[in-house]
Every structure is written in C-alpha cells, then in structure tokens.
Image 1 (cartoon, rainbow, N blue to C red):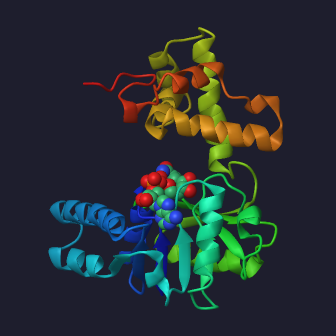
Image 2: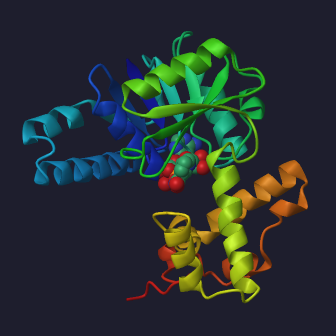
Image 3: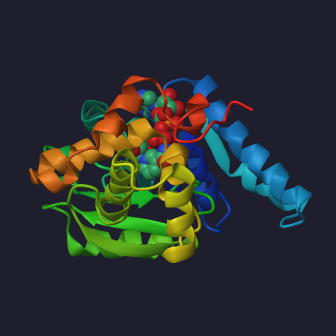
Length: 279
Ligand SMILES: NC(=O)c1ccc[n+]([C@@H]2O[C@H](COP(=O)([O-])OP(=O)(O)OC[C@H]3O[C@@H](n4cnc5c(N)ncnc54)[C@H](O)[C@@H]3O)[C@@H](O)[C@H]2O)c1
C-alpha cells in the first residue's frame, strides 16, 4: 500500500516512520517544499540511526526502511492508496489540501486526517469521498494509540478499514465518535487545567501536586510537568475548543493558564513553565 503523508513535521515524520517500518507499505512524505519534506525524512534517519545504535534493527534494515520513504510536494502522491493529512491545525489549510488532492489521487484513495481537535464532518464537507480521523499520539513512531474518528458522514466500513491499517502498523485503534477533544484530550487536558486551578488556589506546590498524582494515581508524570511537556499554549488551545464546543463552564480555561501563555511561559519549549528548563 502506498501512503501519502501530507505535512512532514513532528507528527508527519513519526507517522511516516511507523508505516515505513511495516512491510507492505511505501511512503510519500510531503511538505510545502522539497527542503521541508527532506527535513522530515532527516528526522526519520536520525531515529533509525538511534535504533541501529541500540541494536533494535540492523544497518541494512535501517537503509531498507529509509529507501521506502520518498519525499516531495503533494503532487508526488498520484499513486497513493491512502492519504494522511498532517498539516498544521488549521481548518482552511486542511480543507484546501484535501480539495487539491482529490484532483490528483486515484478515485479509490482513502482520505484521513491526523487533526487533534477539528471537526471531521466540517473538514470532509464538499469532498468527493468520505473522510475519517486517524489521530496518532506524539511520538507517533512509538506511541501505540490511534483514535479512529467517525464524522457524521464517515461510513462504518471506512472506520473498520482504518482500524485494520492501524493494527497492521502495530498500533491499537480505538473507535471514537466525533466530539471536541475526542477521548484522550477530552479527559487529559481538563485534568491538567484542574491541576493548574488547584495550584492557583494555593492548595499545594507544583512539585507536591505532581508527586501526589504520580504516587496517588499512579500517573507516570505529574499533570503540571505534563502540561509543560505538551506546551501550555497547546493545552490552552484544546481547552478553548472543548469549552466553545460544549458551552460548559466546567471546561473554562484556568486564568493562570491564560496568564502563563500570555507571558510566553509555554513549558519546555520556551525554557520555562511550571518548572525551569533553562539549565
Ligand atoms: N504535535 C502533537 O503532539 C500532535 C499530536 C497529535 C496530532 N497532532 C496534529 O498533527 C498535525 C500536525 O502537527 P505537528 O505537531 O506535526 O505540526 P508541525 O508544525 O510540526 O508540522 C506541520 C508541517 O506541515 C507543513 N505544512 C504547512 N502547510 C502545509 C500544507 N499546506 N501542505 C502540507 N504541509 C504543510 C509544515 O511545513 C510543517 O512541516 C496537526 O493537525 C496537529 O494538531 C499533533
């Protein structure tokens, strides 16, 4: 099967790697320029080198996997059987991408989006074929979960097909009906938001909140450290989507979260969030 990955950033490269490492799959890794697509492939090569170093795969296997990843712009996808859109989280970009692709790919080519929050129903409106959500988790080459999202017009057969493809590349699919935040983010992000509210109310220190959830709820990472890792701007953006979509005040973003985002304290990526990463 030939898989076109549209967007060769953090997620696109990881998804491309997961497919290339499975026999029977070839990948077209695409971005808006050859240079950006090559940059995505360079990430894959780095990961493969790491796996060779750890003796998880041989150098020959790494070379064979790399050879299955062609790079370019989306116009190289003319023989794709499956397209996974992994462009930025912007409805207009995603819609335009699919509208342009439907003119150049075969009629039977399946369309899927890796969106983490946008409506599959809205994204698929006006396309000549149905759309399905195929939501991977970061890092996509290693994280096992794929949420398979059915929009209002997604046929059951398409959901089943994507579930079987996800299983073939070693992932565990879960079926989700379209809803703000799907399953994981709908539960996880409000939990992080609540941890921020607990901290803002002076209930406990940052470290003690994280220790409490690690040892008391058996979480591998405390919620505030996790928020820093995801990026507090992303946490805020997802809270806004869930809040606006549901209209339920229980999803209102924490004022402290807003304040930190306004201050540019976004977590690990800016060197400061609930913890200091400057050293
Ligand atoms: N980062 C995460 O943890 C995560 C997890 C799950 C889902 N997602 C979703 O995956 C998608 C991509 O996120 P990311 O973190 O990989 O972003 P990213 O910014 O790392 O990568 C996006 C890539 O898309 C490219 N791009 C921009 N416009 C394009 C276009 N018109 N056509 C093709 N490529 C284009 C960019 O040049 C960039 O390389 C988003 O929808 C995001 O919500 C992200």
